[in-house]
Length: 73
Image (cartoon, rainbow, N blue to C red):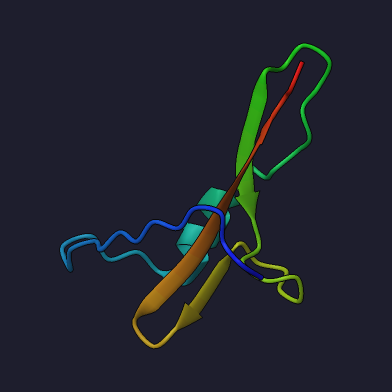
């Protein structure tokens, strides 16, 4: 899978978030396709197709994926 746009953000150690807490927060806004009157919609999706959680944690890193769909008229 190739990325269309990729951004890296480094958070300080003063902002420790457990993987379970982050996954619970991201599960509140999952990705959905645009509705009838929506111009766009953004939501969180799993970083890989074989994952169920929106957070992939390895070593000291956490990978999350935000998906956006724009309606083209």
